[in-house]
Length: 212
Image (cartoon, rainbow, N blue to C red; front, side, top):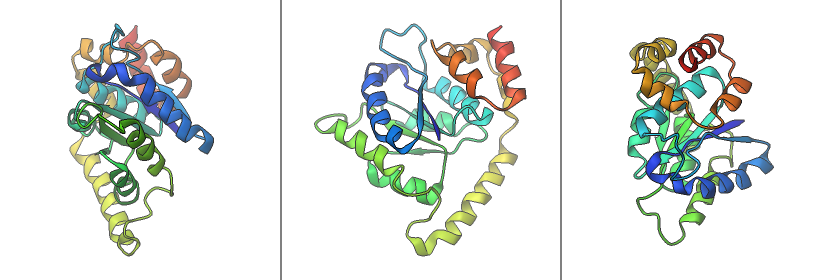
């Protein structure tokens, strides 16, 4: 699994801690982590939570990654922004129980965490435990197990609903404020990671046009 980490500007100073913790949990399981920044509070490529949504949707819809891990101060803004786009199902994850139930019940492809609210004693332990619980079982298995069939059915229904209620990703990229979109792709390593991994030719072409 290719996992993208994205940090919003107010919590950029915590990028290294989040990145290192995530890698230590998932790399032994065979997953790859791509850090799309922000890399520090001084990073000139600043990301708002709205731009997190643009970046996350571009990565997921293009196939450049399979899972986005992101957040902001409360996690709410990042979650709302991500869920504004097609092909993204983002959960608000506060603790390990949230993480496990999201993977089993909702089977989404993005999580948004609060990196300021409740960020006190033991925060690094909670961070590790959340990441661990994301990968203890195959996603979509259901919880409790006797609810697996209706939960899986509802997930498929929601996927079909989003296809109708959300427009095409290329159309979105072409019609949003160009400066807003270009800013979402301004990270130091965006081009290297994205073009090496993206699979959707239409989205790749749209991104190249934006960056030109």
